Image 1 (cartoon, rainbow, N blue to C red):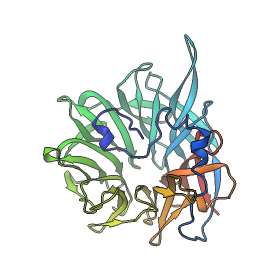
Image 2: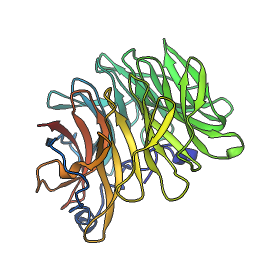
Image 3: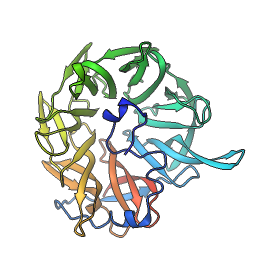
Image 4: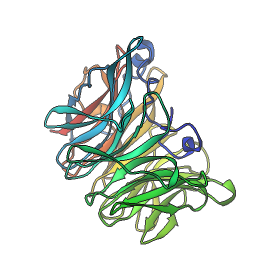
Length: 367
């Protein structure tokens, strides 16, 4: 497991995310061990699956979907170099069956993390080949715009709403990593819950922002809700940490939080209360929510043969269900993470091939 950045961001980003090459080179034996998850709940809702393909490489990961079924993420591309060829990731927009390379801000790497209803995309890219840091971008009308920073050397964008407002995190002039809101051509520091770092991961059409921040004295990382200039600590499930990843139009928030004992559990925060959504085993993470309050994410599964792996889930009607049990059998793929969900019921998942170990993104359509 890795994070887009190699510093304190390890504490505040997805505990399940697809690394530059870590998931690509999984061995076939490990991938085979992911198959055969035990059914958790029966469901009448099933899905067809569509492989989004790649930009010419052998791996793709998706992170968001809008109401029109447009999907964003990153896909490996093959670039010519002095020594022959090299592979790197480029941001993509998948629309009407076609995957489009969004390019970069001048470097060789980019990732698209969120898309709004008009097809505007937020993400981050480097500015030169094989270099760090990254800068947040907004892709609008075929152009990728650098959003700058809070005065430091880098920024990353993770969420966007239908007004084109973007959220993420950025270094400040004092080298602190803070959550930001980009609106009206200006990047605003959202502050922290007393410590540093903080990061914003999602925003709704009411301009409410969610993410996570370290508490004062480094005493833990907690999910926050930022609204009208005030950052509110959402608490935990009784443990030490929590992180919020998404918020819907009704102000419901999802993410993960630690209970008093054990690992982390997916949560739904609604009406001032944080509810534990449970887990298949000892861990789960909620990553997206639609306007009806249905949640998708990833959860740790112990298979019948004793192996363990992360499986994509859907939470609806008080039930946590393994999405691998709701797709056609024998596909050759294991859905490991559901990262996006829209109001028509479409789900975006990342999956591992049980033979090659490569990762592809999939669109699930309800039948």
